[in-house]
Image (cartoon, rainbow, N blue to C red; front, side):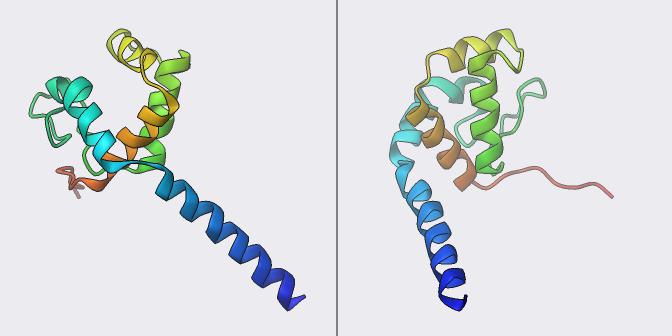
Length: 109
């Protein structure tokens, strides 16, 4: 039984680590400068209140949001058009890049 637990945990760790390695930080940075920075800012922390701050957001959240915009599950005319041209690799790379940046959001109590 102990060997099964070790094997299962090792397999899960391998799957998670391969997904992390699959994303390319430099490709994400390049795509962000090309497609995202004009609205969200170079560091993902747009000073404009009508554009969300995405720097430092969770990677999985950013991936899912972009996939939802691309599929139409999440509606926004600007983001729908921007996400329509992104490949799955672009989405992974952008999410990896923006999640690696420091965020400027703070909790108010």
